[in-house]
Length: 365
Image 1: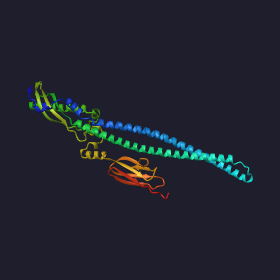
Image 2: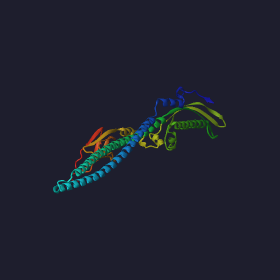
Image 3: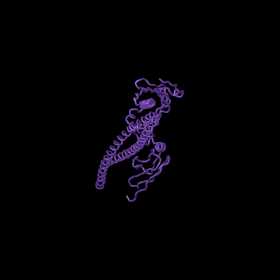
Image 4: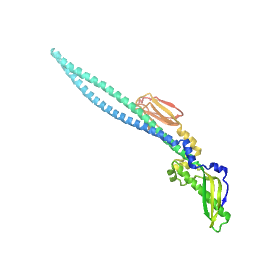
């Protein structure tokens, strides 16, 4: 056997893969877990708001049913008042012929019917006010729900980015491995060819071993292995040193090396392994793309009318005032109300802003 000394560099780098990975895990928090916590909180907020919206919707339905009942009772009371008035007018007519005609009972019935009508009108006004307030609460809840869903979508996008970032970091691992391989040389080979083949196959085994360990250590190892076909991990032997080598008889040549290896995957490798869009990985556009996705601003829409309808980019957000998050750029704002001309503008939003709308009465209608 031929034995050779191990360089100090390789000895310094030859600490175990597992211990270095554990130390790194302690230092660096998982970026995906942080996003998952935010997603869980956002889901809880959405669920709670959806429950509130359902309760408010049910209450509004009850208020509208009560309003219908009050209106029906009002019609009946108005008819009763008209009958009492007609009866009282008839008694007044009799009074011209008979001064002793009794008006007190008829006057009392008319007064009672009139009081009932006024009470009904008061109940009707209160009912209509309750409906307006409930519709306003529903509108605000709907706006908030739309904002929460938008924030949830943004967090889902951020989670994909975090997964890609985590995998890219995991793929940049390097390690020092000891690898032994015995090659059986054919009788037609020269000694030099036999030694060269053995060294080549030993390095190839080191590369395959490193690749297997690298894939096994990935957080999303199972998914990455499913999508491995066609992905270029580009594993390089950065430095290697033969520990021992030599013939062992019957044309067998054994090579034992220590090598430092590192993966230098293609820019889109992480996205391919996770089966997500390559836009998360492409270096030329990833920075600008991420900035654009995260560059959201608060926009408020107000108008001079109540019970209007706000639509932004084809999505309905209820009535004004509306407050929501939008990415910087051009957006289509539409505010409408029966009897008024529809406001329809494309507005560039460059920062936190308020869109004021004055609806003009549609005289042609």
